[in-house]
Image (cartoon, rainbow, N blue to C red):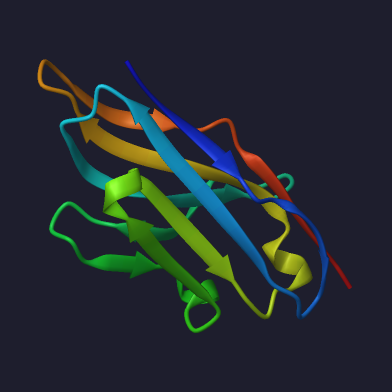
Length: 120
């Protein structure tokens, strides 16, 4: 089995910064894609930032220039550095991944979510 564990959420004032981490563990052969989604209160889950299967990065327009996704391949970990946070960034942030073990592919893995609250 493969699982994702997130950390780093919390409460921050507008203009502040937070860094989220997501570590994948288990029988990992290859990480095909990995990134972050968020679900604001009363809204649908949306893409924030993602490393795609071809190695490129995608960002939501609303976070471009403020958020940066990075990774440590040796640790099977992705990070989301969030700067200049706004109250509208308040959401539960979820890590998601498409990971292959040697025997099967886990194409829609999700972490447990971590709350980010930005106060005005």
